[in-house]
Image 1: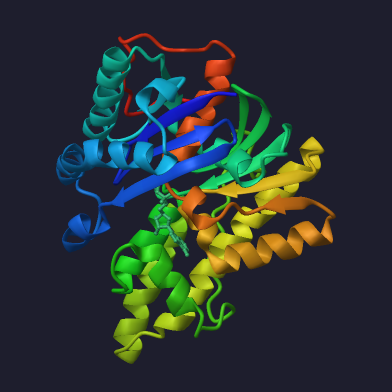
Image 2: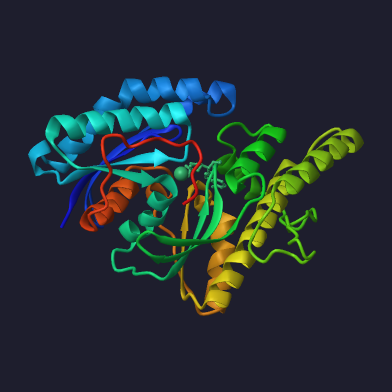
Length: 338
Ligand code: KG4
Ligand code: ZN
């Protein structure tokens, strides 16, 4: 048993949570979406300031909701990489200070490992090996989870992350920020077969199609060209059809790679994480494909797919139990491989 306070401030959510291994005792997230909305995207300086203003309150609320005192905690897990460096620093400084004041071990957690651990919170009986598709605003990674701390990245995006592509195309269609949920809503009224778009294949040095890597910048450019042409030819845009066709193309590209990786590696269980896991068409295509191939799939609830501190605490709990703790000189990194 390990009772761990988790702190997550890598991007635009200020979050703190308490878990007992794979069980959530509290999970508090202060979203900054309204602060960034006027700019149409995350502004790093604004993010840092918002973290600074809310971090202490969020931590206090997480402890209160868990009904625990500092003395009852075994340790503090904190996201130390990758992310916006100013944002990471605020979480890490808070964690270091609290670790020193309350004499608790400090455990630095990689943000992507946190997303993997959301799978265990959603499904406490889950054991490796399994395949994790992580699709967020910053990442598109296909990860073979072999054991705690043993992760093989099978595929990733060569350019834009899936969520970033949703956000950029939503901006072209003037659907607002954040773009992913707006695209999903707009697509409900549209025809997913209205436009044929490039699926984002990537070549290997031998000139073959890479089985697991993706590229979404070509798809985004194709959408930009199509939008300009339709606007010029017709004077208006079939927004719902464009959103539905884009969404179906992204979902198809991801689903194909997930199924191929699961079959190639003999992995019977697939878990999806990151904000794009909320996408209704991705869920529909993955459900259909996994059922057809007899594979199990877990979609964690949305609150665990998007950035949260419970996933960081859960990863921290396992590292703590494996005696993998960090010193007070724990560093932050804006980029760091898993
Ligand atoms: O995991 P997340 O909350 O934050 C990080 O990027 O780490 O993911 C946010 C991303 C955004 O790009 C957002 O547009 C996208 O997830 N997203 C969606 C949907 N809901 C959120 N994309 C497509 N369809 C959705 N329903
Ligand atoms: Zn994330």
